[in-house]
Image 1 (cartoon, rainbow, N blue to C red):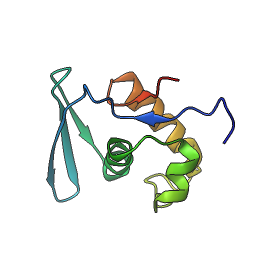
Image 2 (cartoon, one colour):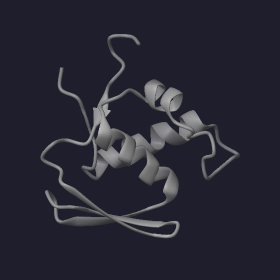
Image 3 (cartoon, rainbow, N blue to C red):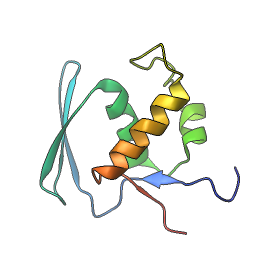
Length: 97
């Protein structure tokens, strides 16, 4: 991993509450008061970053994330977009150096 590869995590201040009904997942962010509907791909990624800090490369290596929703686009592209979106809504953040 290069020095400029960011590590991502769910900040300790972000208390997530999860609910799952079959393939539907809803997560409530107690810190922001926002509720988010997630597909299973996004839920898997968010749960991974809730358990540990990691880079995208580590996420891909550690999980069976290869079965992304949109098979027409490479998983790496989907993950980069998802991480950007999860960051923008405050569910994950880069680890402070």
